Image (cartoon, rainbow, N blue to C red; front, side, top):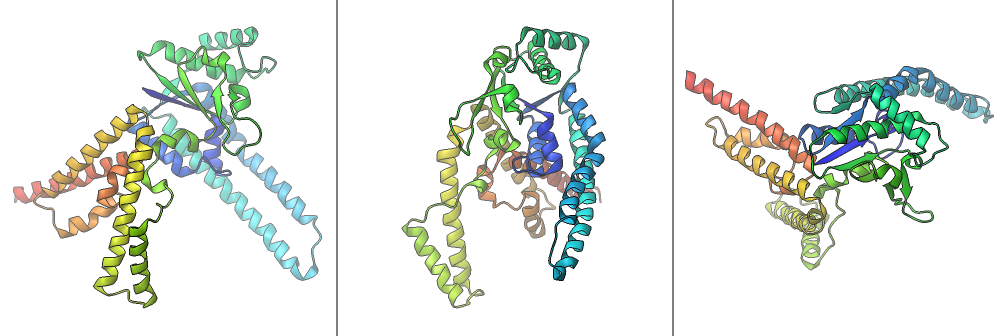
Length: 366
């Protein structure tokens, strides 16, 4: 079973949307994966404490930093003919400040609601964990023994306590935190864009087999679908199809059957290439547990589609509306999309099927 610990600083990035790697779409995917039991999220109570403190101080902190920006702009001399632009910029900063606070508070509510749900395993901060935290610090059993950050040690002891109580022969932990200097060792040498980290050995010795990530984007790479793949290389067949399509576009012939046929051929070849790349290069690298989860979801989606189309109430309009229920994916590309999207489609089709079954039942009752 795969478990995930996500540090408070990652959730702060989700709420602020200030840097790439923790976009709200990734948080939505995380919720879907946890809700679909593809990933078990465990959150020490100490992390919740930090999030509470952070949101409590947020309005003042944001106002202070926006104030710093405004002071820089206010004290900057500008050409008199663009003084109006300077004043507009200062006013715009006030608007951005208020929007930032409002957005931050909204996302904080979403994060808090999720973390308090029964889908997430919470680890209470008990007196026993508090004592073990102090003992770990006194033993120097942290990557930086000179550091006095009790919270980091409390996180580790919370996780150690949790895994000592679960029955799982081979748990695997995804550890996600921006604080790599406090929890991890870097494997890459020199300046590189793709930095790689591992959980520090002094911590790894007390925890299950672990993988260390510094953002949600990294943690959720196993959730890749064909949509994130680069465009497939153009072979001779693809080049001919594109050239034929471009011929009709040059002639502004967008209404003929030949144009739609050419467009369909390009799209078919494009999808075929991407599905092959996904099946041959992406899928084999996924952990077996996630591959099995994907296959179960694909089979359930196929079953639900057959059940929907078997309903008496199913008609051409139902088929037309189906696209919105499968997130506007081409039906033949569903097996190659991400796991989170598969789980959302599965849940969506269950609702669609229940609607049609209720419609069938009402017809029978008449």
